[in-house]
Image (cartoon, rainbow, N blue to C red; front, side, top):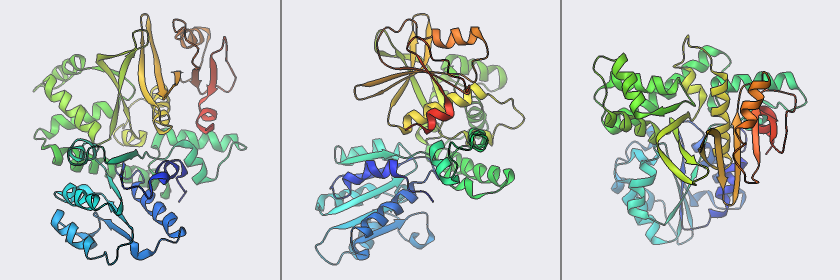
Length: 401
């Protein structure tokens, strides 16, 4: 397994801080491995093994810990001196009232606490109610393409192998454990199991969804049409035409919100580039991992342009950018990515097939008069950069960190 230095470098300055470290992300994206890698670093700093407490709440070994009282009693029995202890709680949302125990440990001021969870709502609204301002959170994602190359020991010297690996990444995503399987059937089975776990445990069970058939239809539609612009009105119209029972706008909004909270998808708001404000009404939804869409996308046409757009969106999130869709008076740009005072603009397309496509993609920036960098990303190997607009091959861009 590779060392995920990108995330460790962000978390490392907080190892000895009293702030609670929340490590969150979609199921099976590698959160537990991050915890193990942090523990290894602590041991290398000569932290005693007896002062590191690790509990994986998905392990049967700890199934007796049902609630906050059980958790508090078990951990306190492990503490035998006044030295600093490092506590690691993996998938803590499985413990009823867990936040009360964490709040109690935090109040003592001598523990460094790390927790993980799969549900963003669990680790935002509920948690913030009890510990507002006393925690710091880190988003973990499936492997980036650069991490996949590191895992597979493929570099840019072997262009054919690199492109083959990229097409595999486009199709099956970057869930870490899926790379342990050798064939498509095994990969599809593994990803299907993850998908089912997210839908059943993080959405249906948690939010008490009753109309499972309708919910599954909506989920399937969203995950098999990534990178598309949606409006509630259009989606309601679509399902009312294609489903005899129909769907209300409120139900649709709720289901989309549940999918986002489970981190199956991510919503990109529309941003008025000229007016510098968020626009309501239309959004784009991107899959956290394209492989999870592939397990539902049987016998449907491949959408390479949409897949590339999804990959670029996820990569920008991994690099720490806030990403929105750029709305202009006469059109839009795919992404406006900001981080502190930095701003980048992106157009993403499959290939710059002819002059009309080139004019369309580069022309999207015509009405943006600022001096922030502007990129066109595609599969093309020839450099089409022009008039200060940078063209990058997507593989080169993904590997250029």
